[in-house]
Length: 289
Image (spheres, rainbow, N blue to C red):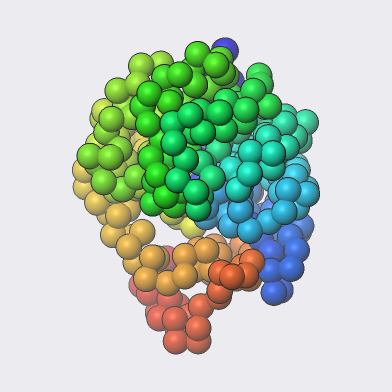
């Protein structure tokens, strides 16, 4: 696979703009949001990941929404489609559609709820990767969310079964859990936790796929371009401040405060901020932006 086809640099784990009540996509907001990321010199976006509420939408919604992301990116940003879903059948359907939609890559987290053993993990990821071939395929490792780690042996065997498996997004926050994935030769690793950007890139990671970059794109991109321990610590402090609130709605409110017409609405069972939380966030933003 050509190196030019692979993801690089800083990708925002994008929020998903929604209409009031979270009932449907706010089609008109995708363009201004991605214009913001282009202006911030990001390299791409991850659509429908954790920060984008992905698993709360139907297969059909995610297929339509991915086209909104791709259309808004207009070739200026790479668009990686997160296709992780509860079942292998839904994941395969999303992955197979991603290339037709114009995505540049596919990422898949292990299905949550059931703790999959190595055989089940391998079968699921191999089916997903083969469904989107020849698009580059990335495993999204996040044990806290999926409920289990993706083992190194599964990843080695996956490379044998799926030539388009080229890398990972690793969102495990503990360095001891993150570091082993850097030792897999020939796989590009993207850092999820902003606190680990310096250590991760120093250890061989090629970039970051960051939820914080959806709201503070310049800050994250600057640390990815010139990684320092102080820069990563500053991002960790910024992320901790946001995490005091319901994250997806808070990220949307921060984006809106910067002039992008994104509503705070989220898809249930996620919730918006209370009046008190909103007031606290507004006060913090006055000192931050």
